[in-house]
Length: 339
Image (cartoon, rainbow, N blue to C red; front, side):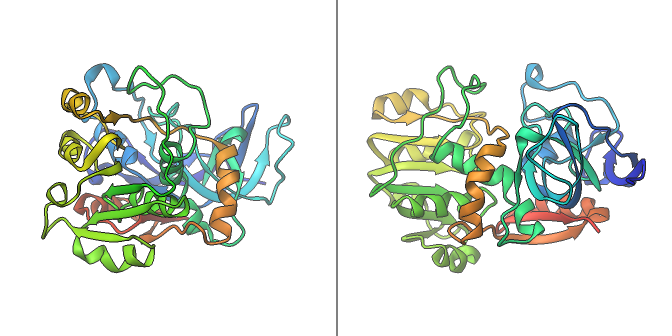
């Protein structure tokens, strides 16, 4: 029988990595439609440190009200421990993975940095058999982001970032530039674009060239040595996995009729220039989807898509993992392991 208490990473105030505390917390109680998962690994993503800091990067009207203590994290891989009575398509002992309650859990309701997490069954999928829990935990948010930008939204929820829904564009035989190509989302964007038949130009620092060549990129640009927006012309699509105000510099690399997809669009102010150049600018917010993770499991299982792990840390060392994230220049994903 599951204990009523567990170890988790909690914070009692906003701040830097030093606010993360490894301590006891109550095991979540199951509600209708939920599954209790014994966590084996938890992936780390930018929204984790945005919440930890108090969402300072969001406009005040977008900042959710947070009730402390908070447990960070959305991405998990683990084993089903218990199920609500109305959940019939999973069983105790199933190996599963999920992005938990995102974006609905922006105020800290996802709670993945813990030994146990309650997961809506609709967010959950069976873990790909061909990979371990660490790689499975590194996948959900980053892979769903790449998939929903490039292949299919998988939902009809209103887009909070723009009036119209985001629409992916055809990739076969297109030239696609990926900025931030070695990061958690970037290295998956590269693989999906190649799988779809695109010619991929990867922009990253030089230390990542060997990995990106291995992942099949057709051209590599080391941004520390060259200026990519001065070298590339007539691209069909730019996917900026770094995003922010600087995304507009890539407009000049695109052909008329092309598209710019900033993964992090806040601060982008190049819409007038985009209109003059005949370029579409579009973004979306990733949403949890057990159905899409079930679809993606096959691509992870057979190696079509590979999750690269930058480094792992025990759950108790979440502070050190966040300090690693703050240093930047990640190659793939950071993952917490849960004993």
